[in-house]
Length: 278
Figure 1 (tube, rainbow, N blue to C red):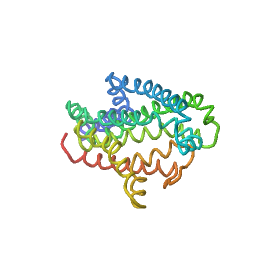
Figure 2 (cartoon, one colour):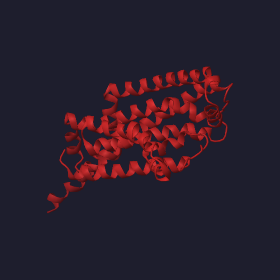
Figure 3 (cartoon, rainbow, N blue to C red):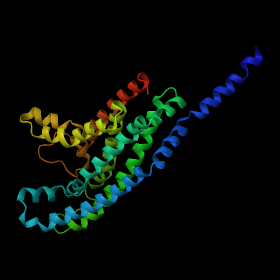
Figure 4 (cartoon, one colour):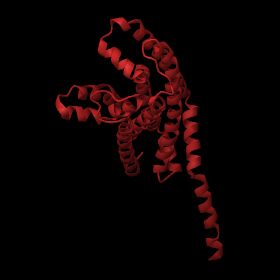
């Protein structure tokens, strides 16, 4: 009896060592890093966003006298939101596409089967993938946000001066990276649920480009609240230096709504990952 049972603890310890969350994260980082298109896409995203920010800010200053007084007042009230908003559309679209592809591409290539064979419990795979991708997008998002601010602020200096130490500015700039990271996890969750790259991208982009603008046109107070609690509309509240007329949510409330959307979708993805075949 002793001979038969003695190896068991060592085997269990070895299995536990192999399946540690740290090793899972290293594995997921290797996957992302080995796909050069992902890292190149993020690098290009940063460069292109900074270029677009500079172009839009220069155009805004050049056309300042031709713009409506209400637009001028909005830029003076929230110059940080104006700077960050000029390039955030491009950033959020790229992050959504990458978030879907990080998980959905593994289903299309069949690589997910190898991952799930190595980790039978499955959910840690999704958790490790989400953690690595979320941290990566957070870093890239912060670099993009601070870079955009330091490019846009000098261009707006004569019309709408703003400094990083002004009230609400640092929170808005740093919050942009947090917003993009949560949006990336939102897209990853959709990709894990749908498991089809094209369909997942269509669904996520539909939220960003179609559903949110359509909701903004809904009449009455109900339409205002529906729009305010959609993921991207709520999350972008974090990128504003000051509240604007008609805002339903504050910055932290908005990012909290986006975090709740993301958490619910990730929970659904985790349940389906355990129940469905790869």
